[in-house]
Image (tube, rainbow, N blue to C red; front, side, top):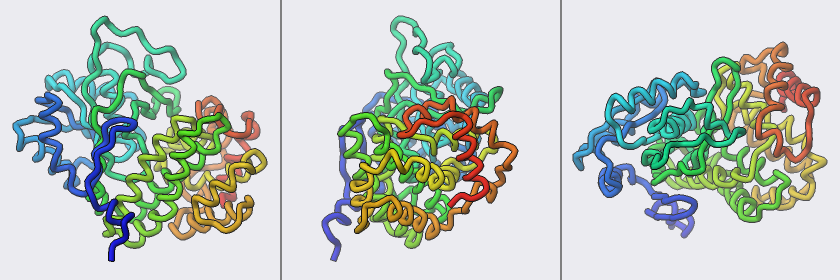
Length: 394
């Protein structure tokens, strides 16, 4: 017998918070009529190189074509999207006479799509939208193109807002770009799309979502709404992630993870922490998978933050169904999850050399996520954490 929670995960639901969200298995097929209702005629589909030939891209184009909507695909997107990729995507958008952006894929495809939408209808360089700068002055009457976000993994949580992590090729740093006036017109969560995701990517992206929830909840700012969302996200991820990896055909597990990842993405509007600050710069220098890098860095940062998050542990522990609420039990549960998912133990296991620790630390210290970590850290402290993640890990 299917319990009510599982039944809900197999159903179709429409939500209006924080943006219009359509959830449910098979809902990709509805995109044509939805795009037509938005008045779209020729959207540009932006995705990553690894996704371009996967079945969901063809299914997306067929769904659009069935309602008479043309589309093109831009897929020249690196695993960690580069500013040069965005320049090329904008050129294709303009030359093709496109009127909207559909960002589909994992974090790289969606970040590239959002950055393309930021720059499509203006002559601003993408770095004029740097999160740490004042927003550029746009022409009177300027409008961003309609943006539709479709995650094909359950991890990034990038589908409900405009922020995008882009690699600055000259500085070898990942930086956040955004504009408050760009928001998705539709987020489509279809767990059916994620069924074919390999176990490794399911695990890596799933841990990325878990880190979002943990780091967001531990940010010291007072934000009860994001805190509640983070805890619900952590509960869903703790329940469904092992199942999604070990029973990859389970639609309920895939659905639970998509919702959990989406919630975790909403929760980090509150901020993130040193796991992300370090991971961003490791990815920029060594092109590592973001979720995998987060997973490896997490234990070292948790140990560092332990004195500052003791009051957060009871709620975090309850979300994971733990009987104890002390740091040792929480840390052990996280490490057991990483072991169960076959996450490498250290950054050295994925090719990050000890010689890079100082450079990573200096750049991570400038990352916006470092500023919201629950415990302050200077460059030397971050360097020690990076060395610990490279040599010891968990």
